[in-house]
Length: 268
Ligand code: ADP
Figure 1: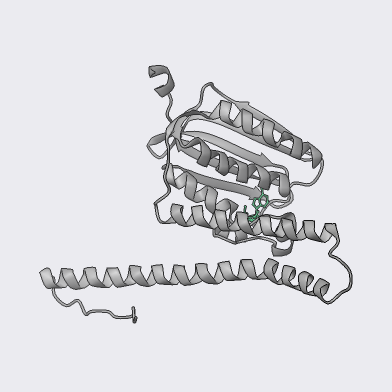
Figure 2: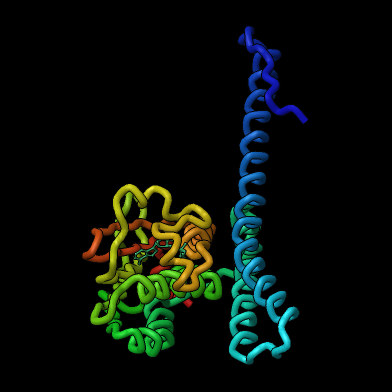
Protein backbone atom coordinates (compact mmCIF):
# COMPACT_ATOMS: atom_id res chain seq x y z
CA UNK A 1 0.00 0.00 0.00
CA UNK A 2 0.92 3.65 -0.31
CA UNK A 3 2.26 4.86 3.01
CA UNK A 4 3.06 8.31 1.72
CA UNK A 5 -0.34 9.68 2.59
CA UNK A 6 -0.51 12.75 4.75
CA UNK A 7 -3.62 14.48 5.99
CA UNK A 8 -3.51 18.28 6.26
CA UNK A 9 -3.67 19.46 9.87
CA UNK A 10 -5.35 22.87 9.91
CA UNK A 11 -7.32 22.96 13.10
CA UNK A 12 -6.27 22.85 16.74
CA UNK A 13 -9.48 21.05 17.78
CA UNK A 14 -10.20 17.31 18.09
CA UNK A 15 -10.13 16.85 14.30
CA UNK A 16 -6.69 18.46 14.14
CA UNK A 17 -5.47 16.05 16.84
CA UNK A 18 -6.87 13.03 15.01
CA UNK A 19 -5.23 14.18 11.78
CA UNK A 20 -1.90 14.68 13.57
CA UNK A 21 -2.10 11.22 15.17
CA UNK A 22 -2.87 9.72 11.79
CA UNK A 23 0.19 11.39 10.28
CA UNK A 24 2.42 10.20 13.15
CA UNK A 25 1.14 6.66 12.67
CA UNK A 26 1.78 6.59 8.93
CA UNK A 27 5.27 7.97 9.57
CA UNK A 28 6.00 5.17 12.04
CA UNK A 29 4.52 2.56 9.71
CA UNK A 30 6.74 3.85 6.91
CA UNK A 31 9.78 3.60 9.16
CA UNK A 32 8.88 0.04 10.19
CA UNK A 33 8.29 -0.91 6.55
CA UNK A 34 11.66 0.54 5.58
CA UNK A 35 13.41 -1.32 8.44
CA UNK A 36 11.76 -4.59 7.38
CA UNK A 37 12.81 -4.09 3.78
CA UNK A 38 16.40 -3.39 4.82
CA UNK A 39 16.50 -6.45 7.07
CA UNK A 40 15.36 -8.76 4.27
CA UNK A 41 17.98 -7.28 1.93
CA UNK A 42 20.74 -7.64 4.56
CA UNK A 43 19.85 -11.24 5.37
CA UNK A 44 19.68 -12.20 1.70
CA UNK A 45 23.10 -10.63 1.18
CA UNK A 46 24.65 -12.33 4.22
CA UNK A 47 23.35 -15.79 3.29
CA UNK A 48 24.08 -15.43 -0.43
CA UNK A 49 27.88 -15.47 -0.10
CA UNK A 50 28.35 -18.72 1.87
CA UNK A 51 25.59 -20.44 -0.11
CA UNK A 52 27.18 -19.55 -3.46
CA UNK A 53 30.52 -20.80 -2.22
CA UNK A 54 29.10 -24.16 -1.15
CA UNK A 55 27.11 -24.52 -4.33
CA UNK A 56 30.21 -23.92 -6.43
CA UNK A 57 32.31 -26.43 -4.50
CA UNK A 58 29.65 -29.12 -4.67
CA UNK A 59 29.06 -28.58 -8.39
CA UNK A 60 32.79 -28.82 -9.11
CA UNK A 61 32.86 -32.21 -7.49
CA UNK A 62 29.76 -33.43 -9.28
CA UNK A 63 31.60 -32.89 -12.56
CA UNK A 64 34.78 -34.55 -11.39
CA UNK A 65 35.68 -38.23 -11.10
CA UNK A 66 37.09 -37.67 -7.59
CA UNK A 67 35.26 -37.98 -4.32
CA UNK A 68 34.92 -34.91 -2.14
CA UNK A 69 37.99 -34.79 0.13
CA UNK A 70 37.20 -34.86 3.86
CA UNK A 71 38.75 -31.40 4.42
CA UNK A 72 36.32 -29.93 1.91
CA UNK A 73 33.40 -31.55 3.73
CA UNK A 74 34.70 -30.09 6.98
CA UNK A 75 34.85 -26.61 5.46
CA UNK A 76 31.33 -26.92 4.10
CA UNK A 77 30.18 -28.17 7.49
CA UNK A 78 31.78 -25.09 9.13
CA UNK A 79 29.91 -22.83 6.74
CA UNK A 80 26.62 -24.57 7.52
CA UNK A 81 27.26 -24.08 11.25
CA UNK A 82 28.07 -20.41 10.68
CA UNK A 83 24.83 -19.92 8.77
CA UNK A 84 22.84 -21.66 11.52
CA UNK A 85 24.40 -19.37 14.13
CA UNK A 86 23.54 -16.40 11.96
CA UNK A 87 19.91 -17.49 11.69
CA UNK A 88 19.73 -18.08 15.49
CA UNK A 89 21.29 -14.66 16.15
CA UNK A 90 18.87 -12.99 13.75
CA UNK A 91 15.95 -14.61 15.48
CA UNK A 92 16.83 -13.39 19.00
CA UNK A 93 17.81 -10.00 17.61
CA UNK A 94 14.41 -9.59 15.95
CA UNK A 95 12.72 -10.53 19.24
CA UNK A 96 14.84 -8.02 21.14
CA UNK A 97 14.25 -5.25 18.58
CA UNK A 98 10.51 -5.80 18.87
CA UNK A 99 10.76 -5.63 22.69
CA UNK A 100 9.57 -9.24 22.87
CA UNK A 101 12.68 -10.84 24.32
CA UNK A 102 11.69 -13.00 27.28
CA UNK A 103 13.86 -12.29 30.30
CA UNK A 104 14.17 -14.50 33.33
CA UNK A 105 15.54 -11.85 35.69
CA UNK A 106 17.10 -12.81 38.99
CA UNK A 107 19.77 -11.26 41.23
CA UNK A 108 23.10 -11.87 39.57
CA UNK A 109 26.55 -11.30 41.04
CA UNK A 110 28.49 -9.87 38.11
CA UNK A 111 31.86 -10.53 39.75
CA UNK A 112 31.26 -14.26 40.10
CA UNK A 113 29.64 -14.41 36.67
CA UNK A 114 32.48 -12.60 34.88
CA UNK A 115 35.15 -14.61 36.73
CA UNK A 116 33.58 -17.74 35.34
CA UNK A 117 33.34 -16.28 31.84
CA UNK A 118 36.96 -15.10 31.89
CA UNK A 119 37.99 -18.65 32.86
CA UNK A 120 36.01 -19.94 29.88
CA UNK A 121 37.69 -17.67 27.31
CA UNK A 122 41.18 -17.71 28.87
CA UNK A 123 42.32 -20.72 26.88
CA UNK A 124 41.30 -19.20 23.55
CA UNK A 125 42.91 -15.88 24.52
CA UNK A 126 46.18 -17.56 25.46
CA UNK A 127 46.16 -19.51 22.20
CA UNK A 128 46.07 -16.09 20.52
CA UNK A 129 48.95 -14.78 22.64
CA UNK A 130 46.71 -12.61 24.84
CA UNK A 131 46.59 -12.07 28.56
CA UNK A 132 43.21 -11.68 30.33
CA UNK A 133 42.82 -9.94 33.73
CA UNK A 134 39.83 -9.16 35.93
CA UNK A 135 39.53 -6.42 38.54
CA UNK A 136 36.71 -5.40 40.83
CA UNK A 137 36.26 -2.63 43.40
CA UNK A 138 33.71 -4.42 45.54
CA UNK A 139 32.01 -7.73 46.07
CA UNK A 140 29.39 -8.65 45.29
CA UNK A 141 28.40 -6.40 42.36
CA UNK A 142 24.78 -7.26 41.91
CA UNK A 143 22.28 -6.59 39.15
CA UNK A 144 18.89 -8.10 38.34
CA UNK A 145 19.36 -9.90 35.08
CA UNK A 146 18.78 -12.90 32.88
CA UNK A 147 22.08 -14.74 33.29
CA UNK A 148 21.82 -16.43 29.89
CA UNK A 149 21.32 -13.14 28.00
CA UNK A 150 24.04 -11.41 29.99
CA UNK A 151 26.39 -14.29 29.19
CA UNK A 152 25.79 -13.70 25.49
CA UNK A 153 26.49 -9.94 25.88
CA UNK A 154 29.87 -10.49 27.51
CA UNK A 155 30.72 -13.46 25.34
CA UNK A 156 30.28 -11.21 22.29
CA UNK A 157 32.42 -8.43 23.81
CA UNK A 158 35.14 -10.83 24.97
CA UNK A 159 35.38 -12.71 21.68
CA UNK A 160 35.57 -9.39 19.81
CA UNK A 161 38.38 -8.25 22.11
CA UNK A 162 40.23 -11.51 21.33
CA UNK A 163 39.48 -11.26 17.60
CA UNK A 164 40.59 -7.66 17.16
CA UNK A 165 43.73 -7.67 19.32
CA UNK A 166 47.12 -8.75 17.93
CA UNK A 167 49.38 -11.23 19.77
CA UNK A 168 51.09 -9.89 22.86
CA UNK A 169 48.06 -7.78 23.77
CA UNK A 170 46.02 -7.63 26.91
CA UNK A 171 42.32 -7.83 27.72
CA UNK A 172 41.10 -6.29 30.95
CA UNK A 173 37.69 -6.81 32.56
CA UNK A 174 36.83 -4.28 35.25
CA UNK A 175 33.72 -4.53 37.43
CA UNK A 176 32.55 -1.57 39.46
CA UNK A 177 29.56 -0.93 41.66
CA UNK A 178 27.61 2.30 42.20
CA UNK A 179 28.78 4.22 39.17
CA UNK A 180 26.64 7.36 39.01
CA UNK A 181 25.17 8.37 35.66
CA UNK A 182 22.44 10.97 35.40
CA UNK A 183 20.50 10.46 38.59
CA UNK A 184 20.85 6.70 38.84
CA UNK A 185 23.49 4.26 40.03
CA UNK A 186 24.76 1.48 37.85
CA UNK A 187 26.90 -1.60 38.02
CA UNK A 188 29.50 -1.21 35.29
CA UNK A 189 31.49 -3.90 33.51
CA UNK A 190 34.21 -2.65 31.15
CA UNK A 191 35.93 -4.88 28.63
CA UNK A 192 39.14 -3.24 27.39
CA UNK A 193 41.65 -4.45 24.86
CA UNK A 194 44.95 -3.21 23.48
CA UNK A 195 43.87 -4.04 19.94
CA UNK A 196 43.47 -2.43 16.53
CA UNK A 197 40.89 0.09 17.76
CA UNK A 198 37.99 1.63 15.86
CA UNK A 199 38.15 4.82 13.78
CA UNK A 200 36.04 7.67 15.14
CA UNK A 201 33.80 7.85 12.06
CA UNK A 202 32.84 4.17 12.54
CA UNK A 203 31.70 4.57 16.16
CA UNK A 204 28.14 5.83 15.41
CA UNK A 205 27.44 2.73 13.24
CA UNK A 206 29.05 0.14 15.48
CA UNK A 207 25.83 -1.26 16.94
CA UNK A 208 24.02 -1.44 13.58
CA UNK A 209 23.36 -4.97 12.44
CA UNK A 210 25.89 -6.32 9.91
CA UNK A 211 28.05 -3.22 10.25
CA UNK A 212 31.76 -4.05 10.04
CA UNK A 213 34.64 -1.61 10.08
CA UNK A 214 36.68 -3.84 7.81
CA UNK A 215 34.41 -6.18 5.85
CA UNK A 216 37.18 -8.49 4.58
CA UNK A 217 38.93 -8.87 7.93
CA UNK A 218 35.77 -9.50 9.97
CA UNK A 219 34.40 -12.06 7.54
CA UNK A 220 37.72 -13.86 7.71
CA UNK A 221 37.64 -13.93 11.51
CA UNK A 222 34.25 -15.63 11.43
CA UNK A 223 31.96 -13.10 13.12
CA UNK A 224 28.34 -12.79 12.00
CA UNK A 225 28.31 -8.98 12.20
CA UNK A 226 25.47 -9.20 14.72
CA UNK A 227 27.44 -9.46 17.96
CA UNK A 228 27.30 -5.80 18.96
CA UNK A 229 23.67 -5.31 17.85
CA UNK A 230 22.68 -8.23 20.05
CA UNK A 231 24.74 -6.88 22.96
CA UNK A 232 23.13 -3.45 22.56
CA UNK A 233 19.55 -4.76 22.44
CA UNK A 234 20.02 -7.30 25.26
CA UNK A 235 21.48 -4.63 27.57
CA UNK A 236 18.71 -2.21 26.59
CA UNK A 237 16.13 -4.88 27.48
CA UNK A 238 17.69 -4.85 30.98
CA UNK A 239 17.26 -1.04 31.19
CA UNK A 240 20.99 -0.55 30.74
CA UNK A 241 23.23 0.85 28.02
CA UNK A 242 26.66 0.39 26.45
CA UNK A 243 29.32 3.03 25.83
CA UNK A 244 32.39 2.65 23.70
CA UNK A 245 35.67 4.52 23.65
CA UNK A 246 38.39 3.68 21.17
CA UNK A 247 41.68 4.87 19.79
CA UNK A 248 42.97 3.33 16.53
CA UNK A 249 46.10 1.19 17.14
CA UNK A 250 45.73 1.72 20.90
CA UNK A 251 42.65 -0.23 21.86
CA UNK A 252 38.97 -0.22 22.68
CA UNK A 253 36.84 -0.18 25.81
CA UNK A 254 33.21 -1.27 25.85
CA UNK A 255 31.42 -0.31 29.09
CA UNK A 256 28.18 -2.06 29.97
CA UNK A 257 25.94 -0.22 32.47
CA UNK A 258 23.34 -2.34 34.23
CA UNK A 259 20.94 -1.18 36.94
CA UNK A 260 22.61 -1.62 40.29
CA UNK A 261 20.89 -4.29 42.35
CA UNK A 262 23.17 -3.82 45.30
CA UNK A 263 21.79 -4.89 48.65
CA UNK A 264 19.27 -7.21 47.10
CA UNK A 265 21.32 -10.34 47.75
CA UNK A 266 21.92 -9.33 51.37
CA UNK A 267 18.27 -8.54 52.04
CA UNK A 268 17.54 -12.19 51.18
P1 ADP B 1 31.61 -9.11 13.93
O1 ADP B 1 30.93 -10.41 13.90
O2 ADP B 1 32.01 -8.62 12.58
O3 ADP B 1 32.71 -9.03 14.95
P2 ADP B 1 30.18 -7.28 15.71
O4 ADP B 1 28.80 -6.72 15.66
O5 ADP B 1 30.54 -8.07 16.91
O6 ADP B 1 30.41 -8.09 14.38
O7 ADP B 1 31.21 -6.06 15.57
C1 ADP B 1 31.02 -5.12 14.53
C2 ADP B 1 32.35 -4.55 14.07
O8 ADP B 1 32.91 -3.71 15.10
C3 ADP B 1 33.43 -5.58 13.80
O9 ADP B 1 33.31 -6.07 12.49
C4 ADP B 1 34.70 -4.80 14.02
O10 ADP B 1 35.01 -4.07 12.83
C5 ADP B 1 34.32 -3.79 15.09
N1 ADP B 1 34.76 -4.20 16.45
C6 ADP B 1 34.01 -4.81 17.40
N2 ADP B 1 34.71 -5.01 18.54
C7 ADP B 1 35.94 -4.51 18.32
C8 ADP B 1 37.14 -4.39 19.11
N3 ADP B 1 37.18 -4.85 20.37
N4 ADP B 1 38.22 -3.80 18.54
C9 ADP B 1 38.16 -3.33 17.27
N5 ADP B 1 37.08 -3.40 16.47
C10 ADP B 1 35.99 -3.99 16.98
